[in-house]
Length: 495
Image (tube, rainbow, N blue to C red; front, side, top):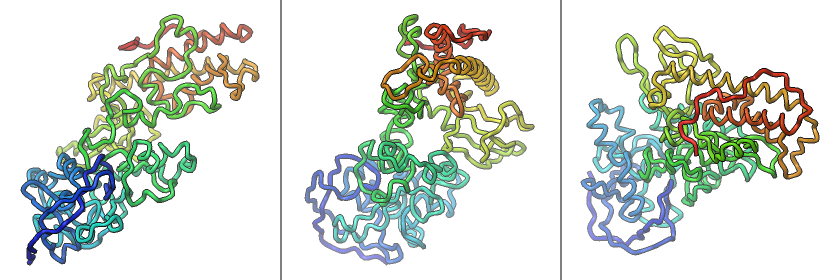
């Protein structure tokens, strides 16, 4: 049984200037506020304080952290309990992820709602991620602020992975199989300061201006990857999915994906390396070395493809973050959700349609259940770009075939050019170096991606590179019968 205490207590209230992961006490603006004393929580709650006023979703934490509390009210976390009850499938097994307890923070064992059944712990409140707030509320100081963890590993006892997993919401389990998830353990650029803004969690948050504290902030940068809290702001619903930046804005600095996948899409006179994360510039129609004959003939500054911002409002997310349910073909019963957090646009799927671990499948096999196994092209059709998955697959194969044809011819010509034309250290770009850059856009593991991201731009770059090589190096032998006229459909939009 709990007993209310009387009187009031003087506490510090912090009006936050920004909303970030794991907001702690900061010094931007400190004011005094008189509030009712905290009702002593049950002992079994393990120090969780929960709601101050449940009727208007006012948490005890938000009595002082007003900015964070106000923004939290606009998130799905703030309506988690109500949404569960209205779902039609509420069970006791679901309640732990829709309330304040040991899930999501460092506490172990029964606590909060699970231990007490007290309504003050309904919904996914501040303490669900930060941990028990009683000590901080009783004696506020920076030293006893409960900090949230950004780690997403579903095997841990804190972090997003304790709830965002399972058949309905396998966000963390899918993420763990993605390049974002495996980067945490394998990417060597993480030790390079110039790479950390995209290859480390701490670096990426700092690059976006996030200054708040969190458990892993002081960890070595090569131990924290691109985890959930890098892309998602758990306090704010400023953008769909509580994302930190938009996925629809074509401005590279304001688009969540392109912000990093945009580092070396054009030749850099001071760097000898080739293309690096050129996906954004490809989609936005500005990648590659543009031979003089492109500008002279058309005065274009961009060549948009059908996947660019003119026809594809969600850009990368349209294809790379498809969500769909897998059901039993015979009964129609739900089996599992795919939530798009492997970030694979045309994933290999098994006979039921669920993405497989192996992603080196063919593209032309159709399963008995009707799935394209090899690869699932359904996102291309449901996005409105292509009429059917089969049509999308045909378009991808056609553009990839054309890319290979032009790449082989370009590589044949480049092999005849003297080595002296490839310096890499003189700060200049010869025609040979520029053409080779474009060849790399269509080479190796990037060729399929580049030919899909913007087939019109890539074909233009390869065709005009071949033409410019023949013009500037008349001694090279050209015996190929490759047609250098435009073979692919013209861009939907040119600017």
